[in-house]
Amino acid sequence: MNTNTESTLERINRNDPNLKELILAYPYFPRDADEWGELGWGIGRNTHIETVELDFISWIGDENKHASFVRSFCQGICQNRSLQRFALKFCDFDLFDKGILQELVPFLVHNQCLRVLDFYFSPIESGGARLLGSTLERRTNKSIEKFVLSGTEMGLDDEGESVNALLTSLKKYTHLKTLELETNEIGQVGCNTISTLLTSTSSKLQKLDLRDSAIDNYKLASLTSSLAKNTALQELDLGNNFSITATGWAPLLSLLRSPSCNLKNISLNENNIDYDMTVALVASLADNHTLTKLSLCGNPSITTPGFVAISTLLQIQGTHLEHLDLGENDLDDDVAVALSNSLANNCTLKTLILNDNPSITTTGFVALSAIFQNPDTQLTFLDLTENNINDDSAIAFATSLINNDKLNTLSLGTPPPLTSTGWAAFSRLLCNASSINNTYLSNHTLKSFGSSIRCVPGTEKVRTYLELNRIDKRCKKTQDSSRALYGSL
Image 1 (cartoon, rainbow, N blue to C red):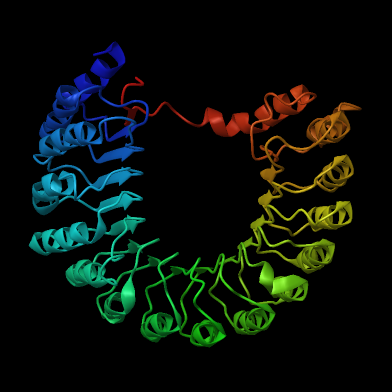
Image 2: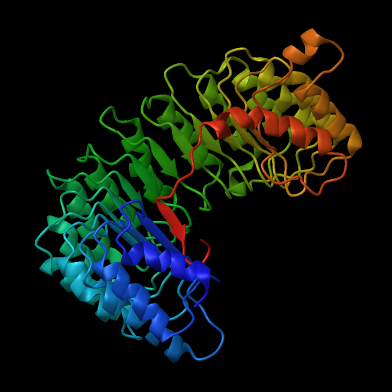
């Protein structure tokens, strides 16, 4: 066992009150069953640790042997009563089939402090869903506030019946605020149960993630009907549900127009949304005064006229959009100009995502740069990655940002596709050394171009100036000893 590993185990075994979070992430894993077991039993006896997370549990070789390692670990942590969050992410093998989920049952039943349970793209399939459902029924303290079961392959072989069994067990979990079910087969009966959760007078559910969950018109109708009676839900993700048509979207659009709608964040990424549906969406949101975040990434079928219509939302007084995602939509210069015009007097939008729209040319980027000449702009993050940014575009942005004190991040890609000419413009923006006064008036707000430019030629001065802009924030941070990456201390 290496010295680094021993330092982590020592802190766990001596019940270090400052160690609150432990992450086991590839390649920093225990080496064998004994080491996995020792770590698990150490966590089991610990009374201060609050979070344990296992990431990227995958091996090339004997899958059964490595699954036995994780079982040994789970046997140990079952004695723990302090953990508030347990997460198992990106596991290659079936947790139910390999007996890992079964070993966790005593921990899940008896740890009354548990608030977050997270199985993210770690398959449990239908058998695991039923076991989890019966286990959650046995808990006396219905304390879980966040439940993540994304990409677990539940319901694929029983049309969602097992998912329904699991969701039914959540009816008594009145503290549940987040439910993430991305990439599972929910089924009609599962959607009906979610609707029951939403209509409960005791429901505190604030976030519901149903991305890629085979939602169709009928299932969405059931969900929308319950949302009309719900006042708690604030975030809804319906991305990647291609079966929903205009007929299915219509009730949701009516809900968005309703004064009783409390949704603040809605994501409709990668759906079959066309121009007509977009016009209807804009009409609904024109009367909406709660939505702050709208994501329409990956919907090129909206077409240019539809995106121009969306840009008009930014002109409407009373709308409160702070985050707009239009990435991966084949936007062109006409849309860029429309967005710029709409943002000329906007004072609410903080994040604009336009990544992967290669049809935008210098004309469009010059228009977008003019956004920062608006003294009231609140834009702090602009994502232009995977676009055809050139030196002329960079010069336009550098010129417009001279007097801007809001933008923190201008994301340009990896690496940003600029020459020394473009970087020189940003260098002057960040530190204009032509006079003391110009140096003082240089931009001290911009802190990042979204990715590392360490190896990009001609960026030495830019990197230095960005670091100086970041240094104040960094100086305020103190060393955090509450978090440990296994094997890295």
